[in-house]
Image 1 (tube, helix red, strand yellow):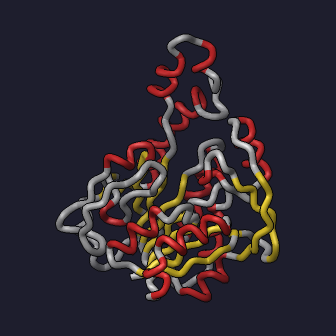
Image 2 (image 1 turned 180 degrees about the horizontal axis):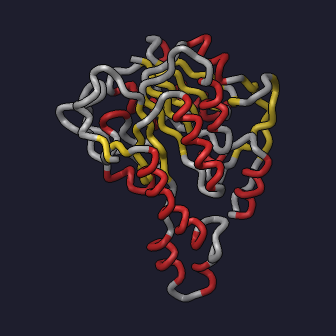
Length: 278
């Protein structure tokens, strides 16, 4: 009944997981957001259902500079290259010194979760790498997928395969507001929940779409990357909306948005998950 929300932000996902009856360990580097969520979800914190870890996931523990982004709060990062990307898109950063922890140390203290959500702006792979070598790993994982380097995207799948994950879903996060919680539920308790823009949405067997093999998932990403290369943040026409009168509408129509990769490990009880596309 344990879920990790790594990249808690304003607690949208944690609140959803709690409402479905799960315990949650939420990791967030920004101390201001941690204070905000601690106040709003104070009963869950006091009751032990929600544990908030105010720290950045890093490869070397200790104090680290976190770059908070006030214009787009979920773009906070410890990565210098991501700060440059954000600045190029008009979002400035301010420096905060926070504690950095290894993901393996978080696991050692709080246990391995049933579901692991990862969204920490550039350091997501540190969480996957932190699972390598463990005898037990989460049944389900979601990770914000790579948008720039095809080789980096393939490495995400390589590590997931090494960890035993063989089924995948490619979920468009720009349409998360259209997701509807199934009833009867396939994960936890049923809740009539509306997902706000920027939240991660449904997970596990409730995540939208059919499970795909690695090959089919990467084929899906081939089409997505073709769009990234055309109108993505680093694409051929990144300022399309400025160059043509109708460019804003055209870019909105063509832009692929961003995607989460959901991964599942097979279990002895598998077979009722809606099928696997090969």
